[in-house]
Length: 192
Image 1 (cartoon, helix red, strand yellow):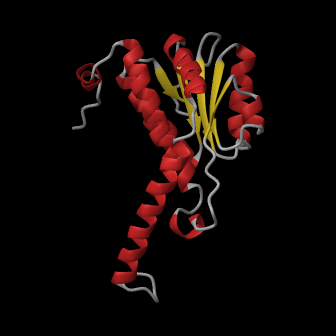
Image 2 (cartoon, helix red, strand yellow):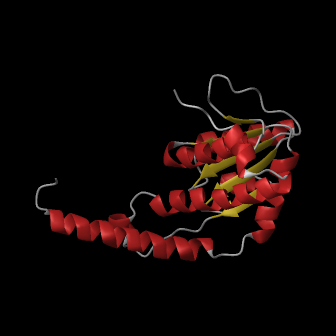
């Protein structure tokens, strides 16, 4: 336990943080993105292969999405892994970056577009370099009210909203492909 805190204050902070997250995530996710989501689903379901990319916690959100895409039967890879093939014409690349200025994310987008792949950006900044290099931008505007530095530090709202938004996209892809949960379970990794 951190010096100067008590178990009671830790519980109060955890409760306040959870309430803050739920309230703000609800507001962030209530923004109408139906046009961008429909465009994204069309790209995802028509691509030859799907690639996802992100760094840090954005990368973890991207990996969670990639796992669901594999479970839906989509040929999906995480860029940077040793077994990832090359991005080609007709493929799709989904990149997660809150700032939209992560150099590696911008490079991935530019290379993907150059070879003829479609790029979907999940970012907090539509006019960022990543936003400009993308075919579709799923904007997650997560600027807080100053309280986030204590209750949801370092981009937590963006990352949590990304996971939830992309889980909604998973449901739409699932419906578009006519997949069921039983189909997905059949492709779920078996851990031994």
